[in-house]
Image (cartoon, rainbow, N blue to C red; front, side, top):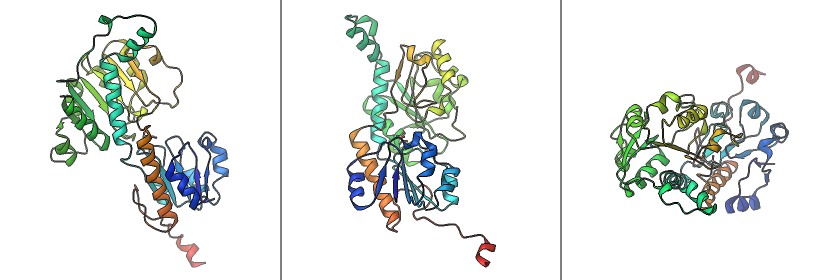
Length: 330
Ligand code: MLT
């Protein structure tokens, strides 16, 4: 069984690949990690989204694995160093869903500042109360983008069309970095961004440095009129701290597409009317999913046919580690 897909991933490119190679798709295998371990014999390519935990234990069982293909841009569910130690290619779709996520940021931003969700609910309840839903314009506001990568830069460019001032905080960039010059964002320290932005949008990977970055202390610095949007990874926000800050009116509202735990348990966030919640759908558009699946199908086929991967985080071809010296001598 060369290709095993452990989550709901579908599209024309995967169907076409299944005509040329044997592909086994089990949409809910990620929920049954013991079964997954049992099915790894002979698997040469593992195709996952963000739910399957690909750790060292799994990799030890996957003796024939040559490539892990991640249908998306975040790699926090994959132990990339463990895969690299075992010579396994880790590939992903780095930019195929960036436009969709950037557009979702604006859907959330406008929903928040124009109070779309409570206004919709009130109309459905038979009311017609225009004064209760007076919002604010995006025009002339300062947008603070935390993480000016592929998605952050696309958010920046779209924000200009709304007439927003764009500030960005990103420790990996300098004023002359392409992302900064092309997006015309003003690069500022995170502290300045937090205290001055009207809207804060987060576009960070989940790493040891970013886990829990947005805690009560950070929220305390925001303007009371500010709104906070996270479409990156739930783990960068301490949800309990955000709830406390929202209840104390330290900030005006929040929109979360991603959560500390997915799917989340019931949460006080569900009861707050200045909150917009979506189920990690930033990348879920027909266009983005088609491109993502095309990208990972291409990478899998390349590697399994002995050609280099085109979109990888470690190396383009599998490289089996050399056997230990004493094993060679025997
Ligand atoms: C990504 O990492 O690309 C997005 O969050 C979408 C996903 O995880 O499926």
